[in-house]
Length: 121
Length: 400
Image (tube, rainbow over all chains, first blue to last red; front, side, top):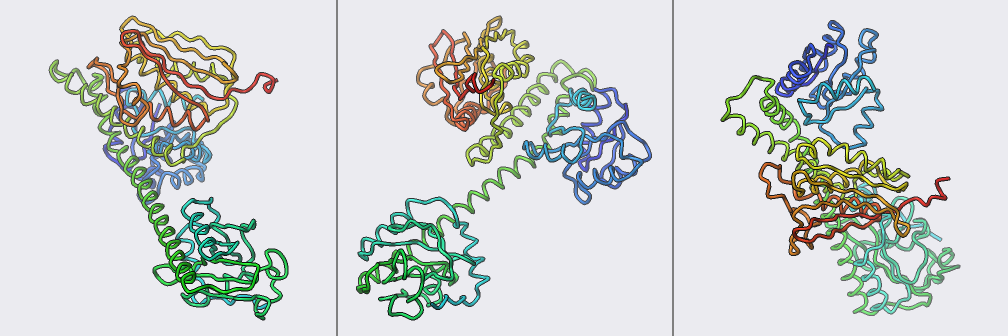
């Protein structure tokens, strides 16, 4: 399974990369902002995208809309990564069309299995 | 009738009024006392604190009048706020062409006498008045005029205090929310790195390093729990906790809670027994599970290895009652009365376990109380503890 992590925080990408790759056995690619994420999503066709909500410039919601607007990336499931744990915020992201939401800080030992559960639900 | 004119800088005046966030708020004792004092001292049957927005005069406090607002175009106070910062007096409305055919004069409340002291903001805008009204022509004595002005200043002191309190509360909410959210991102990296190291997926750690990393991992998880609890408690205290109250099978709440705690219970060698009748509660499933998980977590912490925690759910006297019972060391009597207060802990002496945040039971209490319920405990030292909560259940006939 190929995962694309889009997050501006290098340290979070590093930990998520290890969690999905080394613990979860996935192939992991990264992007540090929304624009780069759109290009990597189009070129690499990952099985899902772990997309940070709060990013400078093109934020998670804008990146998500751009992904869904393109025929080449529209079908790729998106799981949001957010620090806002409010029920209404999680619901808002799901209403946008996200496959699921992972809250920060996540458990690195269960991140991959949690995302697999989200993707199959 | 001559409608009141519009004050100069009306836009700025309305913006100033907005800053006080007072319109359409509930009655408050401090304002109620001022209108009673004004009515009594000025010997007038009606006294009002009125605030004038674009279309109406709205009464923050009133005595002797049932209406809560009237249109601005027929208001006496609309005239008063255009008359500078002195008391505006109409001794006999029937003899004044501005008011003689005003519906407030020709019909109830049959105003004859009116005196209004403006409510002046520190930057000079008249937001409304403290006014007294009588159905007989009369005037104000000198001391009464002075008293009305002094009381109007006290209304402004109260409004200003209220505005500052709201501002402080808003800043506190923003601060707690921002800090909590901003802490989550670095904590993701810290907790993640430590968990990856402690798990061995990055390679085996030297025997002496593993406990050090485990201590750091455990405390990073504790810090995350504390941040979550502080956010929850802040939301509960300020009434911003989102609750979806709906009929929910109690069994589902309890099963979900036990499932959440099962790994921890297994690690501690504690069995959880569940006995639950066919009870449907009116509540927020997620929040009720949060309460039960918290009680279960405490019970497991206080149980001996190989022990049992018993969870029961039943309908009693028209209420749903959940009990979580452990057979551990119990809680000292001196601590029992303070248990549901903030930052009180009854942590197990078992040093392996992560200490609690000290907010868990305070949060449980707040959630149960937001469900209109009650929470409590009984404990005997050496014989274990029973924590319980009661909330409304849906009568069986309403479920058919």
